[in-house]
Image (cartoon, rainbow, N blue to C red; front, side, top):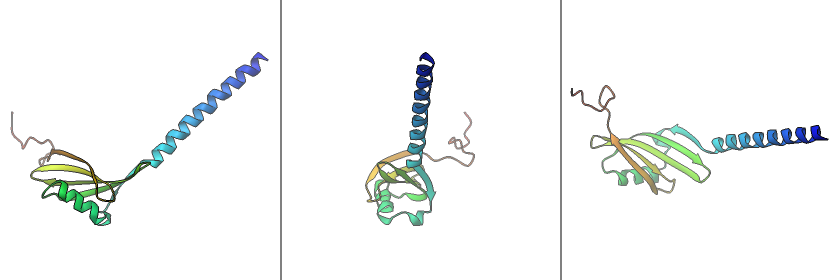
Length: 114
């Protein structure tokens, strides 16, 4: 009887492990992000990004599909800085992040010694 109890416990632990791994994999599939051409981005999304950062020149776009909905992430440049702007399909800006534009060798130092 004790062997049966040990085997049942081991099967229960195995089943829980399979469920956890399976749920995690399903979660990752629901949070997908992929690059898309700027021409595939809805005009309302591009307009919202342009209003969020004056003079932005959009360079790249990604679409993120999450449980909570779809979000577009647009990347571009304005005033010597790089920006990432997250926008809903309806044109609501969720987040705007600003960073320095990299110089030609990718290190943001304008080749100054120092």
